[in-house]
Length: 592
Image (cartoon, rainbow, N blue to C red; front, side, top):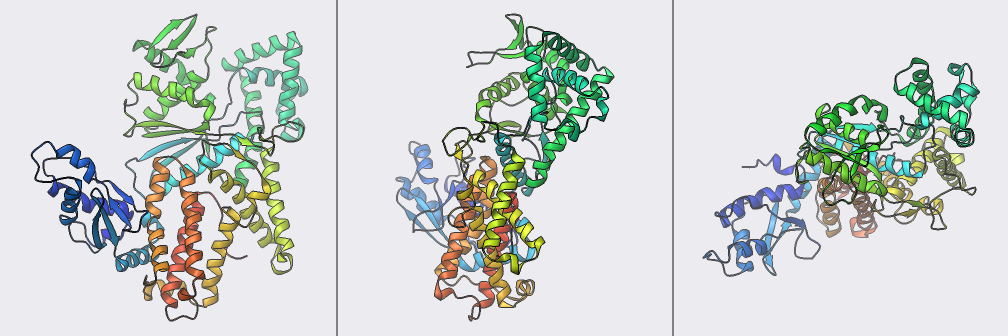
Protein backbone atom coordinates (compact mmCIF):
# COMPACT_ATOMS: atom_id res chain seq x y z
CA UNK A 1 0.00 0.00 0.00
CA UNK A 2 1.42 3.42 -0.96
CA UNK A 3 2.21 5.51 2.06
CA UNK A 4 1.03 9.07 2.32
CA UNK A 5 4.72 10.00 2.05
CA UNK A 6 5.04 8.37 -1.40
CA UNK A 7 1.81 9.92 -2.57
CA UNK A 8 3.26 13.42 -2.60
CA UNK A 9 6.21 12.54 -4.82
CA UNK A 10 6.83 12.54 -8.54
CA UNK A 11 4.44 12.30 -11.44
CA UNK A 12 0.71 12.63 -10.72
CA UNK A 13 0.05 10.42 -13.73
CA UNK A 14 2.26 7.65 -12.30
CA UNK A 15 0.62 7.92 -8.88
CA UNK A 16 -2.87 7.71 -10.38
CA UNK A 17 -1.74 4.76 -12.52
CA UNK A 18 -0.84 2.89 -9.30
CA UNK A 19 -4.34 3.45 -7.90
CA UNK A 20 -6.06 2.41 -11.14
CA UNK A 21 -3.83 -0.66 -11.37
CA UNK A 22 -5.34 -1.86 -8.08
CA UNK A 23 -8.86 -1.17 -9.39
CA UNK A 24 -8.26 -2.94 -12.72
CA UNK A 25 -7.05 -6.09 -10.94
CA UNK A 26 -10.30 -6.20 -8.96
CA UNK A 27 -12.52 -5.22 -11.91
CA UNK A 28 -11.14 -7.76 -14.40
CA UNK A 29 -9.27 -10.36 -12.33
CA UNK A 30 -9.02 -12.70 -15.34
CA UNK A 31 -7.25 -10.16 -17.57
CA UNK A 32 -3.66 -10.03 -16.33
CA UNK A 33 -1.14 -7.25 -17.10
CA UNK A 34 -3.63 -4.54 -18.01
CA UNK A 35 -1.66 -1.28 -18.16
CA UNK A 36 -3.66 1.66 -16.75
CA UNK A 37 -4.17 4.27 -19.51
CA UNK A 38 -4.01 7.61 -17.70
CA UNK A 39 -4.05 10.97 -19.50
CA UNK A 40 -4.35 14.59 -18.45
CA UNK A 41 -7.84 15.87 -19.30
CA UNK A 42 -8.47 18.65 -21.72
CA UNK A 43 -12.23 18.81 -21.01
CA UNK A 44 -14.14 20.28 -18.11
CA UNK A 45 -14.98 16.95 -16.41
CA UNK A 46 -11.77 16.47 -14.47
CA UNK A 47 -8.01 16.84 -14.26
CA UNK A 48 -7.08 13.33 -15.42
CA UNK A 49 -8.91 10.40 -16.93
CA UNK A 50 -8.53 6.63 -17.08
CA UNK A 51 -9.25 5.37 -20.59
CA UNK A 52 -9.23 1.58 -20.15
CA UNK A 53 -12.95 0.79 -20.37
CA UNK A 54 -13.34 0.57 -24.16
CA UNK A 55 -10.24 -1.55 -24.69
CA UNK A 56 -11.23 -3.88 -21.87
CA UNK A 57 -14.76 -4.23 -23.21
CA UNK A 58 -13.47 -5.40 -26.60
CA UNK A 59 -11.35 -8.03 -24.77
CA UNK A 60 -14.06 -9.38 -22.42
CA UNK A 61 -17.33 -9.01 -24.31
CA UNK A 62 -17.33 -12.55 -25.71
CA UNK A 63 -16.28 -14.18 -22.43
CA UNK A 64 -19.59 -14.31 -20.53
CA UNK A 65 -18.89 -11.10 -18.64
CA UNK A 66 -21.44 -9.52 -16.25
CA UNK A 67 -20.80 -6.08 -17.83
CA UNK A 68 -23.09 -4.66 -20.47
CA UNK A 69 -20.85 -2.29 -22.43
CA UNK A 70 -17.94 0.10 -21.80
CA UNK A 71 -19.81 2.57 -19.51
CA UNK A 72 -20.53 -0.28 -17.05
CA UNK A 73 -16.82 -1.25 -17.12
CA UNK A 74 -15.96 2.41 -16.42
CA UNK A 75 -18.38 2.51 -13.47
CA UNK A 76 -16.80 -0.64 -12.00
CA UNK A 77 -13.27 0.77 -12.43
CA UNK A 78 -14.42 3.93 -10.62
CA UNK A 79 -16.12 1.99 -7.80
CA UNK A 80 -13.14 -0.31 -7.25
CA UNK A 81 -10.63 2.54 -6.86
CA UNK A 82 -8.91 2.43 -3.46
CA UNK A 83 -9.53 5.51 -1.35
CA UNK A 84 -6.78 8.08 -1.61
CA UNK A 85 -6.26 11.59 -0.34
CA UNK A 86 -5.23 12.49 -3.93
CA UNK A 87 -8.73 12.21 -5.31
CA UNK A 88 -11.56 14.61 -4.56
CA UNK A 89 -14.14 13.03 -6.88
CA UNK A 90 -14.61 10.68 -9.84
CA UNK A 91 -17.23 10.48 -12.55
CA UNK A 92 -17.78 8.35 -15.67
CA UNK A 93 -18.39 10.03 -19.01
CA UNK A 94 -19.17 8.84 -22.54
CA UNK A 95 -17.99 5.31 -23.34
CA UNK A 96 -16.55 4.65 -19.90
CA UNK A 97 -13.94 7.38 -19.40
CA UNK A 98 -13.26 7.67 -15.68
CA UNK A 99 -12.64 11.36 -14.89
CA UNK A 100 -10.68 12.27 -11.78
CA UNK A 101 -10.75 15.61 -9.96
CA UNK A 102 -7.69 15.98 -7.74
CA UNK A 103 -8.02 17.16 -4.17
CA UNK A 104 -6.94 20.79 -3.70
CA UNK A 105 -5.46 20.12 -0.29
CA UNK A 106 -3.41 17.19 -1.66
CA UNK A 107 -2.22 19.34 -4.58
CA UNK A 108 -1.17 22.13 -2.22
CA UNK A 109 0.61 19.68 0.07
CA UNK A 110 2.49 18.14 -2.89
CA UNK A 111 3.71 21.53 -4.11
CA UNK A 112 4.75 22.53 -0.60
CA UNK A 113 6.65 19.28 -0.19
CA UNK A 114 8.54 19.99 -3.42
CA UNK A 115 9.39 23.46 -2.11
CA UNK A 116 10.82 22.12 1.14
CA UNK A 117 12.57 19.05 -0.30
CA UNK A 118 13.67 20.40 -3.68
CA UNK A 119 12.63 19.98 -7.30
CA UNK A 120 14.79 16.87 -7.68
CA UNK A 121 12.07 14.95 -5.82
CA UNK A 122 9.95 15.55 -8.94
CA UNK A 123 12.46 13.93 -11.28
CA UNK A 124 11.04 11.12 -13.41
CA UNK A 125 12.63 7.70 -12.97
CA UNK A 126 12.95 5.97 -16.34
CA UNK A 127 13.86 2.25 -16.35
CA UNK A 128 17.34 2.96 -17.71
CA UNK A 129 20.54 3.43 -15.73
CA UNK A 130 23.11 4.42 -18.35
CA UNK A 131 22.82 6.19 -21.69
CA UNK A 132 25.18 7.50 -24.36
CA UNK A 133 24.17 10.76 -26.05
CA UNK A 134 26.27 11.22 -29.19
CA UNK A 135 25.94 14.84 -30.28
CA UNK A 136 27.66 17.86 -31.84
CA UNK A 137 30.30 15.78 -33.71
CA UNK A 138 31.99 18.40 -35.90
CA UNK A 139 34.81 17.55 -38.33
CA UNK A 140 38.37 18.44 -37.45
CA UNK A 141 39.84 21.31 -39.54
CA UNK A 142 36.37 22.44 -40.63
CA UNK A 143 34.27 25.19 -39.10
CA UNK A 144 31.35 24.17 -36.92
CA UNK A 145 28.26 25.17 -38.89
CA UNK A 146 24.62 25.78 -38.00
CA UNK A 147 23.82 22.05 -38.26
CA UNK A 148 26.36 21.44 -35.48
CA UNK A 149 24.66 24.17 -33.47
CA UNK A 150 21.36 22.27 -33.68
CA UNK A 151 23.00 18.96 -32.80
CA UNK A 152 24.83 20.55 -29.86
CA UNK A 153 21.79 22.35 -28.42
CA UNK A 154 19.37 19.42 -28.86
CA UNK A 155 21.90 16.85 -27.61
CA UNK A 156 22.79 18.91 -24.55
CA UNK A 157 19.09 19.27 -23.58
CA UNK A 158 18.44 15.53 -23.99
CA UNK A 159 21.52 14.80 -21.85
CA UNK A 160 20.34 17.29 -19.19
CA UNK A 161 16.84 15.79 -19.05
CA UNK A 162 18.25 12.27 -18.68
CA UNK A 163 20.74 13.44 -16.01
CA UNK A 164 17.88 15.09 -14.08
CA UNK A 165 16.08 11.71 -14.34
CA UNK A 166 19.00 10.05 -12.46
CA UNK A 167 20.43 8.40 -15.60
CA UNK A 168 24.22 8.23 -15.92
CA UNK A 169 24.86 9.98 -19.24
CA UNK A 170 28.02 9.58 -21.30
CA UNK A 171 28.10 12.78 -23.38
CA UNK A 172 30.07 11.81 -26.47
CA UNK A 173 31.57 14.05 -29.11
CA UNK A 174 32.14 11.70 -32.06
CA UNK A 175 34.38 14.16 -33.97
CA UNK A 176 35.49 13.41 -37.52
CA UNK A 177 39.21 13.13 -36.75
CA UNK A 178 40.23 10.28 -39.07
CA UNK A 179 40.16 9.49 -42.75
CA UNK A 180 41.63 10.47 -46.09
CA UNK A 181 41.44 14.27 -45.69
CA UNK A 182 44.14 14.08 -43.00
CA UNK A 183 46.80 13.05 -45.52
CA UNK A 184 46.08 16.23 -47.44
CA UNK A 185 46.13 18.41 -44.29
CA UNK A 186 49.32 16.85 -42.91
CA UNK A 187 51.26 17.26 -46.19
CA UNK A 188 50.08 20.86 -46.45
CA UNK A 189 51.16 21.48 -42.86
CA UNK A 190 54.65 20.08 -43.59
CA UNK A 191 54.95 22.39 -46.61
CA UNK A 192 53.79 25.54 -44.85
CA UNK A 193 55.60 24.86 -41.57
CA UNK A 194 58.79 22.79 -41.91
CA UNK A 195 58.95 22.96 -38.07
CA UNK A 196 55.31 21.93 -37.88
CA UNK A 197 55.33 21.59 -34.09
CA UNK A 198 55.64 25.39 -33.92
CA UNK A 199 52.42 25.77 -35.90
CA UNK A 200 49.83 27.31 -33.62
CA UNK A 201 46.32 28.52 -34.13
CA UNK A 202 47.73 32.02 -34.68
CA UNK A 203 50.30 30.84 -37.22
CA UNK A 204 47.83 28.72 -39.20
CA UNK A 205 45.18 31.42 -38.95
CA UNK A 206 41.74 30.49 -40.18
CA UNK A 207 41.51 26.70 -40.18
CA UNK A 208 38.72 26.81 -42.74
CA UNK A 209 40.96 28.72 -45.16
CA UNK A 210 43.83 26.30 -44.41
CA UNK A 211 41.55 23.38 -45.28
CA UNK A 212 40.42 25.06 -48.51
CA UNK A 213 43.95 25.84 -49.66
CA UNK A 214 45.09 22.28 -48.98
CA UNK A 215 42.07 20.97 -50.93
CA UNK A 216 42.84 23.23 -53.91
CA UNK A 217 46.43 22.00 -53.85
CA UNK A 218 45.25 18.38 -53.63
CA UNK A 219 42.93 18.80 -56.64
CA UNK A 220 45.44 20.72 -58.80
CA UNK A 221 48.82 19.02 -58.12
CA UNK A 222 49.14 15.27 -58.85
CA UNK A 223 52.51 15.04 -57.03
CA UNK A 224 50.99 16.64 -53.89
CA UNK A 225 47.97 14.33 -54.19
CA UNK A 226 50.24 11.28 -54.25
CA UNK A 227 52.19 12.50 -51.20
CA UNK A 228 48.88 13.14 -49.40
CA UNK A 229 47.68 9.60 -50.14
CA UNK A 230 50.98 8.22 -48.84
CA UNK A 231 50.60 10.39 -45.73
CA UNK A 232 47.25 8.71 -44.96
CA UNK A 233 48.88 5.29 -45.10
CA UNK A 234 51.73 6.45 -42.87
CA UNK A 235 49.33 8.09 -40.38
CA UNK A 236 47.16 4.98 -40.21
CA UNK A 237 50.25 2.81 -39.91
CA UNK A 238 51.11 4.78 -36.75
CA UNK A 239 54.29 6.56 -37.98
CA UNK A 240 55.38 8.96 -35.26
CA UNK A 241 55.91 12.19 -37.25
CA UNK A 242 52.52 11.79 -38.96
CA UNK A 243 50.78 11.02 -35.69
CA UNK A 244 52.27 14.16 -34.13
CA UNK A 245 51.20 16.34 -37.07
CA UNK A 246 47.69 14.84 -36.91
CA UNK A 247 47.51 15.53 -33.16
CA UNK A 248 48.61 19.13 -33.81
CA UNK A 249 45.82 19.74 -36.33
CA UNK A 250 43.23 18.14 -33.99
CA UNK A 251 44.38 20.33 -31.09
CA UNK A 252 44.04 23.57 -33.10
CA UNK A 253 40.52 22.51 -34.15
CA UNK A 254 39.58 21.68 -30.58
CA UNK A 255 40.51 25.20 -29.49
CA UNK A 256 38.05 26.54 -32.07
CA UNK A 257 35.27 24.15 -31.01
CA UNK A 258 35.84 25.02 -27.37
CA UNK A 259 34.96 28.68 -28.04
CA UNK A 260 31.49 27.57 -29.14
CA UNK A 261 31.03 25.07 -26.28
CA UNK A 262 32.14 27.64 -23.72
CA UNK A 263 29.56 30.18 -24.91
CA UNK A 264 26.84 27.53 -24.91
CA UNK A 265 27.85 26.10 -21.51
CA UNK A 266 28.03 22.61 -23.05
CA UNK A 267 30.24 19.81 -21.73
CA UNK A 268 31.25 16.88 -23.92
CA UNK A 269 33.79 14.12 -23.74
CA UNK A 270 35.54 13.60 -27.04
CA UNK A 271 35.80 10.08 -28.39
CA UNK A 272 36.34 10.67 -32.08
CA UNK A 273 36.39 8.33 -35.06
CA UNK A 274 40.07 7.59 -34.40
CA UNK A 275 39.21 6.18 -30.96
CA UNK A 276 37.12 3.35 -32.44
CA UNK A 277 39.54 2.62 -35.30
CA UNK A 278 41.47 -0.14 -33.45
CA UNK A 279 38.20 -1.97 -32.72
CA UNK A 280 36.99 -2.15 -36.34
CA UNK A 281 38.90 -5.28 -37.52
CA UNK A 282 37.76 -7.36 -34.52
CA UNK A 283 34.14 -6.25 -34.88
CA UNK A 284 34.09 -7.05 -38.61
CA UNK A 285 35.74 -10.40 -37.98
CA UNK A 286 33.09 -11.28 -35.36
CA UNK A 287 30.28 -10.25 -37.73
CA UNK A 288 31.91 -12.31 -40.52
CA UNK A 289 32.11 -15.35 -38.24
CA UNK A 290 28.36 -14.96 -37.59
CA UNK A 291 27.83 -15.15 -41.36
CA UNK A 292 26.55 -11.56 -41.61
CA UNK A 293 29.32 -10.07 -43.79
CA UNK A 294 29.22 -11.05 -47.48
CA UNK A 295 31.25 -10.15 -50.59
CA UNK A 296 29.51 -7.84 -53.05
CA UNK A 297 31.22 -6.15 -56.04
CA UNK A 298 34.60 -6.39 -54.34
CA UNK A 299 33.36 -4.80 -51.10
CA UNK A 300 32.29 -6.53 -47.90
CA UNK A 301 28.74 -5.74 -46.90
CA UNK A 302 25.88 -6.60 -44.56
CA UNK A 303 22.52 -7.05 -46.28
CA UNK A 304 19.64 -5.34 -44.49
CA UNK A 305 16.07 -6.53 -44.79
CA UNK A 306 13.82 -3.95 -46.39
CA UNK A 307 16.74 -1.95 -47.78
CA UNK A 308 17.68 -2.01 -51.45
CA UNK A 309 21.30 -1.13 -50.69
CA UNK A 310 23.55 -3.05 -48.33
CA UNK A 311 25.61 -1.58 -45.46
CA UNK A 312 29.21 -1.46 -46.76
CA UNK A 313 31.61 -2.24 -43.88
CA UNK A 314 34.82 -2.69 -45.92
CA UNK A 315 35.23 -0.72 -49.17
CA UNK A 316 36.44 -2.44 -52.34
CA UNK A 317 39.93 -0.93 -51.78
CA UNK A 318 40.07 -2.59 -48.35
CA UNK A 319 39.54 0.71 -46.49
CA UNK A 320 37.04 1.40 -43.71
CA UNK A 321 34.22 3.97 -43.82
CA UNK A 322 31.53 5.61 -41.65
CA UNK A 323 29.61 2.35 -41.35
CA UNK A 324 32.73 0.48 -40.16
CA UNK A 325 33.34 3.15 -37.49
CA UNK A 326 29.68 3.36 -36.46
CA UNK A 327 29.39 -0.43 -36.07
CA UNK A 328 32.58 -0.47 -33.96
CA UNK A 329 31.36 2.50 -31.88
CA UNK A 330 28.00 0.83 -31.27
CA UNK A 331 29.73 -2.43 -30.27
CA UNK A 332 32.01 -0.49 -27.88
CA UNK A 333 29.14 1.44 -26.30
CA UNK A 334 27.14 -1.73 -25.68
CA UNK A 335 29.98 -4.00 -24.56
CA UNK A 336 32.64 -1.78 -23.00
CA UNK A 337 30.57 1.15 -21.74
CA UNK A 338 27.52 -1.03 -20.96
CA UNK A 339 25.05 1.62 -22.12
CA UNK A 340 21.37 0.64 -22.25
CA UNK A 341 20.23 3.49 -24.48
CA UNK A 342 22.40 4.97 -27.24
CA UNK A 343 21.09 8.21 -28.73
CA UNK A 344 22.54 9.72 -31.91
CA UNK A 345 21.74 13.38 -32.61
CA UNK A 346 22.38 14.19 -36.29
CA UNK A 347 20.46 15.78 -39.16
CA UNK A 348 17.55 13.87 -40.70
CA UNK A 349 19.66 13.13 -43.79
CA UNK A 350 21.50 10.46 -41.79
CA UNK A 351 18.31 8.68 -40.73
CA UNK A 352 18.67 5.90 -43.32
CA UNK A 353 22.33 5.28 -42.44
CA UNK A 354 21.57 4.84 -38.73
CA UNK A 355 18.49 2.79 -39.46
CA UNK A 356 20.73 0.35 -41.36
CA UNK A 357 23.38 0.32 -38.61
CA UNK A 358 20.71 -0.47 -35.98
CA UNK A 359 19.19 -3.22 -38.14
CA UNK A 360 22.64 -4.76 -38.66
CA UNK A 361 23.14 -4.67 -34.85
CA UNK A 362 19.79 -6.44 -34.41
CA UNK A 363 20.78 -9.11 -36.94
CA UNK A 364 24.01 -9.59 -34.97
CA UNK A 365 22.03 -10.03 -31.75
CA UNK A 366 23.61 -6.96 -30.14
CA UNK A 367 20.20 -5.26 -29.79
CA UNK A 368 16.77 -6.84 -29.22
CA UNK A 369 14.43 -6.84 -32.24
CA UNK A 370 11.81 -4.80 -30.40
CA UNK A 371 12.44 -1.10 -29.69
CA UNK A 372 10.05 -1.09 -26.76
CA UNK A 373 12.61 -2.02 -24.10
CA UNK A 374 16.11 -0.92 -23.19
CA UNK A 375 18.74 -1.96 -24.64
CA UNK A 376 18.02 0.24 -27.59
CA UNK A 377 19.53 2.73 -30.01
CA UNK A 378 17.66 5.80 -31.25
CA UNK A 379 18.38 8.30 -33.99
CA UNK A 380 17.34 11.86 -33.13
CA UNK A 381 17.02 13.62 -36.47
CA UNK A 382 16.59 17.35 -36.98
CA UNK A 383 15.74 19.65 -39.89
CA UNK A 384 17.66 22.51 -41.49
CA UNK A 385 18.23 26.05 -40.26
CA UNK A 386 17.02 28.38 -43.03
CA UNK A 387 17.84 31.99 -43.81
CA UNK A 388 15.24 34.69 -44.52
CA UNK A 389 15.30 33.60 -48.19
CA UNK A 390 14.01 30.15 -47.21
CA UNK A 391 17.29 28.51 -48.24
CA UNK A 392 19.99 26.92 -46.09
CA UNK A 393 21.31 29.59 -43.68
CA UNK A 394 24.56 31.15 -44.98
CA UNK A 395 26.36 34.49 -44.86
CA UNK A 396 26.22 36.94 -47.78
CA UNK A 397 29.21 35.45 -49.56
CA UNK A 398 27.60 31.96 -49.35
CA UNK A 399 30.05 30.83 -46.71
CA UNK A 400 28.81 28.77 -43.78
CA UNK A 401 28.09 31.03 -40.81
CA UNK A 402 30.71 30.86 -38.06
CA UNK A 403 28.94 29.85 -34.88
CA UNK A 404 31.13 31.98 -32.64
CA UNK A 405 30.14 35.07 -34.67
CA UNK A 406 26.48 34.09 -34.53
CA UNK A 407 26.50 33.75 -30.73
CA UNK A 408 28.50 36.95 -30.27
CA UNK A 409 25.99 38.82 -32.42
CA UNK A 410 23.09 37.52 -30.30
CA UNK A 411 24.88 38.72 -27.18
CA UNK A 412 25.74 42.18 -28.58
CA UNK A 413 22.15 42.72 -29.80
CA UNK A 414 20.78 41.80 -26.40
CA UNK A 415 23.33 44.11 -24.73
CA UNK A 416 22.27 46.98 -27.01
CA UNK A 417 18.62 46.39 -26.02
CA UNK A 418 19.53 46.55 -22.30
CA UNK A 419 21.45 49.81 -22.76
CA UNK A 420 18.56 51.25 -24.78
CA UNK A 421 16.31 50.52 -21.78
CA UNK A 422 18.56 52.59 -19.53
CA UNK A 423 20.27 49.70 -17.74
CA UNK A 424 23.69 51.22 -18.49
CA UNK A 425 23.09 53.76 -15.70
CA UNK A 426 21.42 51.36 -13.24
CA UNK A 427 23.57 48.22 -13.51
CA UNK A 428 27.24 47.36 -13.18
CA UNK A 429 29.19 46.37 -16.31
CA UNK A 430 29.27 42.77 -15.01
CA UNK A 431 25.48 42.67 -14.61
CA UNK A 432 24.98 43.96 -18.15
CA UNK A 433 27.48 41.46 -19.60
CA UNK A 434 26.06 38.43 -17.78
CA UNK A 435 22.44 39.38 -18.56
CA UNK A 436 23.27 40.03 -22.24
CA UNK A 437 24.92 36.63 -22.40
CA UNK A 438 22.05 34.80 -20.64
CA UNK A 439 19.46 36.47 -22.88
CA UNK A 440 21.45 36.33 -26.15
CA UNK A 441 22.58 32.71 -25.94
CA UNK A 442 19.28 31.67 -24.34
CA UNK A 443 17.38 33.24 -27.26
CA UNK A 444 19.36 31.24 -29.84
CA UNK A 445 18.86 27.99 -27.91
CA UNK A 446 15.16 28.45 -27.25
CA UNK A 447 14.38 29.47 -30.86
CA UNK A 448 15.82 26.11 -31.89
CA UNK A 449 14.39 23.92 -29.12
CA UNK A 450 10.79 25.21 -29.22
CA UNK A 451 10.29 23.73 -32.72
CA UNK A 452 9.62 20.07 -33.25
CA UNK A 453 13.21 19.11 -34.08
CA UNK A 454 12.21 17.33 -37.31
CA UNK A 455 11.04 20.57 -38.94
CA UNK A 456 13.21 23.24 -40.56
CA UNK A 457 13.18 26.66 -38.92
CA UNK A 458 14.13 30.15 -40.03
CA UNK A 459 16.94 31.91 -38.16
CA UNK A 460 15.80 35.43 -37.37
CA UNK A 461 17.48 37.56 -34.68
CA UNK A 462 14.57 40.03 -34.41
CA UNK A 463 12.08 37.24 -33.67
CA UNK A 464 14.43 35.43 -31.27
CA UNK A 465 15.17 38.56 -29.26
CA UNK A 466 11.57 39.80 -29.15
CA UNK A 467 10.32 40.19 -25.57
CA UNK A 468 6.75 39.31 -26.61
CA UNK A 469 5.44 35.87 -27.57
CA UNK A 470 7.02 32.45 -27.21
CA UNK A 471 10.67 33.50 -26.88
CA UNK A 472 13.42 33.01 -24.30
CA UNK A 473 13.47 36.79 -23.69
CA UNK A 474 9.78 36.80 -22.72
CA UNK A 475 10.24 33.76 -20.46
CA UNK A 476 13.41 35.04 -18.80
CA UNK A 477 11.71 38.39 -18.11
CA UNK A 478 8.64 36.56 -16.74
CA UNK A 479 10.92 34.70 -14.31
CA UNK A 480 12.66 37.94 -13.27
CA UNK A 481 9.24 39.53 -12.61
CA UNK A 482 8.24 36.68 -10.27
CA UNK A 483 11.52 37.17 -8.39
CA UNK A 484 10.83 40.88 -8.08
CA UNK A 485 7.32 40.19 -6.65
CA UNK A 486 8.93 38.04 -3.94
CA UNK A 487 11.62 40.68 -3.28
CA UNK A 488 8.99 43.43 -3.08
CA UNK A 489 7.14 41.55 -0.34
CA UNK A 490 10.21 41.86 1.90
CA UNK A 491 9.52 38.33 3.19
CA UNK A 492 12.10 35.56 3.59
CA UNK A 493 10.86 32.80 1.30
CA UNK A 494 12.96 30.11 2.99
CA UNK A 495 11.22 30.93 6.26
CA UNK A 496 7.79 30.87 4.59
CA UNK A 497 8.53 27.40 3.16
CA UNK A 498 8.93 26.06 6.69
CA UNK A 499 6.21 28.04 8.45
CA UNK A 500 3.64 29.05 5.84
CA UNK A 501 0.83 27.01 4.30
CA UNK A 502 -0.08 26.91 0.64
CA UNK A 503 -3.80 27.00 -0.20
CA UNK A 504 -5.27 26.72 -3.70
CA UNK A 505 -8.55 28.49 -2.97
CA UNK A 506 -9.17 30.44 -6.17
CA UNK A 507 -9.72 28.78 -9.58
CA UNK A 508 -6.66 30.54 -11.07
CA UNK A 509 -4.51 29.35 -8.15
CA UNK A 510 -5.73 25.80 -8.66
CA UNK A 511 -5.06 25.96 -12.44
CA UNK A 512 -1.51 27.12 -11.75
CA UNK A 513 -1.02 24.43 -9.08
CA UNK A 514 -2.24 21.71 -11.47
CA UNK A 515 0.15 22.86 -14.21
CA UNK A 516 3.07 22.87 -11.75
CA UNK A 517 2.23 19.31 -10.71
CA UNK A 518 2.36 18.17 -14.34
CA UNK A 519 6.05 19.08 -14.64
CA UNK A 520 7.44 15.56 -13.87
CA UNK A 521 5.30 13.83 -16.49
CA UNK A 522 6.16 16.47 -19.10
CA UNK A 523 9.89 15.88 -18.57
CA UNK A 524 9.25 12.15 -18.77
CA UNK A 525 7.38 12.54 -22.06
CA UNK A 526 10.08 14.83 -23.50
CA UNK A 527 12.74 12.26 -22.49
CA UNK A 528 10.91 9.16 -23.68
CA UNK A 529 10.12 10.66 -27.10
CA UNK A 530 13.38 12.68 -27.29
CA UNK A 531 11.44 15.90 -28.00
CA UNK A 532 12.70 19.04 -26.20
CA UNK A 533 9.86 21.15 -27.69
CA UNK A 534 7.43 19.37 -25.32
CA UNK A 535 9.28 21.00 -22.40
CA UNK A 536 9.31 24.40 -24.18
CA UNK A 537 5.53 24.24 -24.68
CA UNK A 538 5.11 23.43 -20.99
CA UNK A 539 7.33 26.34 -19.91
CA UNK A 540 5.52 28.85 -22.14
CA UNK A 541 2.11 27.65 -20.89
CA UNK A 542 3.33 27.88 -17.30
CA UNK A 543 4.28 31.49 -17.86
CA UNK A 544 0.86 32.26 -19.42
CA UNK A 545 -1.06 30.51 -16.61
CA UNK A 546 1.00 32.39 -14.00
CA UNK A 547 0.25 35.66 -15.78
CA UNK A 548 -3.50 34.95 -15.68
CA UNK A 549 -3.29 34.21 -11.94
CA UNK A 550 -1.13 37.25 -11.14
CA UNK A 551 -3.15 39.76 -13.18
CA UNK A 552 -6.45 38.69 -11.58
CA UNK A 553 -7.34 41.35 -8.93
CA UNK A 554 -8.91 38.57 -6.80
CA UNK A 555 -5.47 36.91 -6.58
CA UNK A 556 -3.52 39.92 -5.29
CA UNK A 557 -0.24 38.71 -3.79
CA UNK A 558 1.69 41.37 -1.84
CA UNK A 559 -0.37 42.94 0.95
CA UNK A 560 -3.34 40.57 0.66
CA UNK A 561 -4.58 38.37 3.49
CA UNK A 562 -3.43 35.35 1.42
CA UNK A 563 0.05 36.82 0.91
CA UNK A 564 2.02 33.91 2.43
CA UNK A 565 0.20 31.24 0.41
CA UNK A 566 0.47 33.22 -2.83
CA UNK A 567 4.16 34.00 -2.30
CA UNK A 568 4.73 30.24 -1.94
CA UNK A 569 2.85 29.70 -5.21
CA UNK A 570 5.04 32.38 -6.86
CA UNK A 571 8.17 30.69 -5.51
CA UNK A 572 7.02 27.24 -6.72
CA UNK A 573 6.47 28.71 -10.20
CA UNK A 574 9.94 30.30 -10.17
CA UNK A 575 11.55 27.02 -9.01
CA UNK A 576 9.88 25.02 -11.81
CA UNK A 577 10.74 27.70 -14.39
CA UNK A 578 14.38 27.64 -13.28
CA UNK A 579 14.49 23.86 -13.62
CA UNK A 580 13.01 24.15 -17.13
CA UNK A 581 15.68 26.72 -18.02
CA UNK A 582 18.34 24.46 -16.56
CA UNK A 583 17.15 21.50 -18.65
CA UNK A 584 17.15 23.69 -21.77
CA UNK A 585 20.68 24.94 -20.99
CA UNK A 586 19.45 28.51 -20.43
CA UNK A 587 20.76 30.73 -17.60
CA UNK A 588 17.91 32.43 -15.67
CA UNK A 589 17.97 36.14 -14.86
CA UNK A 590 16.68 37.52 -11.57
CA UNK A 591 16.06 41.18 -12.37
CA UNK A 592 15.14 43.27 -15.38
